[in-house]
Length: 415
Image 1 (cartoon, rainbow, N blue to C red):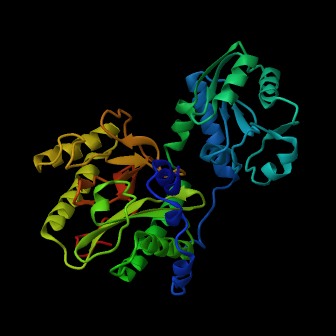
Image 2: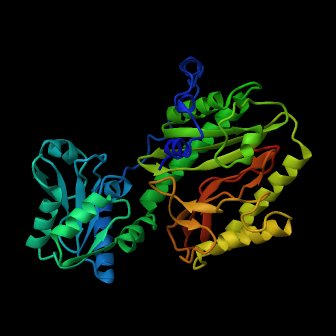
Image 3: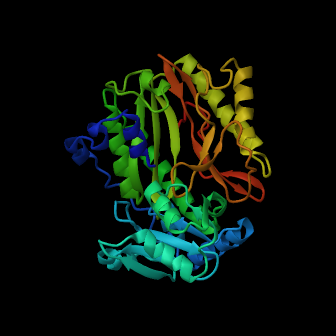
């Protein structure tokens, strides 16, 4: 789910925020910006072949005969196929050995094949045929119609239910040990794309911040960020801008908001580069910084440092969240998720999706390992007043956690 979809589903922004004023958008002059993404190396066939091999290794380890995947980030991750979901099923089946299967409507085959990035068999179905029957037949031909078939966690019920009815000898199980097992551990190629996405977002925030003026709406600030991101070569998915009291609510308020002297401007934005995401938040004040905002900013900055000190290889992900909450409680906030304090998890996984498993949240036992990527965003929120969120993403290296973007040094240099 990208930033626009998240806010739309929460009902917190209207069409005006998704589609900012065309008049204002036309006035945003980004001619001084240059594209930063000309040197990226897109994910290629060799990288995807390695992903298939890793998935098959995990299938053998977990006793799965095959994994079924619908369109979305996981389909792109393994096959390169960029497609959408509709009532007409397009899907991939990765077997425990051999080449995958792509199933798609007959008339969609040429379009689907355009982005296919791995060797795979393509089988089609006509409008009066069942796509799940095509999958079931293919599995039976390969003697994979017994045992366990993994279903990727976003596959819709009609697809898995249809397959289960056609293959009564099969047990349908979660494909998480395979799909998450691959996607949670980013390769150097993926880390490089995420680094570029973060570089673009930081540059867009740096460009936007000094152009913020008193009286601007949240939409106008967001449009500047989006315009800068696009000019720098990122694919922007919108920007969340929270002004004044709205910053006290992590995903904002639908009330009218304007930039005012001495009030918080909270920017939460990101982009994708070749499908890999960034997610960065910065909190600044227009004009003189109030004493209470300065104090909270310094506490949140220390919260980020607590998270990084705790996020060591082998540490359960939930312990990072626990450490931050323990620190905040000593500072008088909380306890737990209570307000004023930190009402959301300390961080989320990130990669091809802006939010993906696993999370830095209480109770998460998954140990931190090389290649895992997370946001670090231990904000503090004061309902009716203001909020402060600093968010920078990091990845786990053999030497421990490493930021993609460096946190700000102080509220006086907030970006």
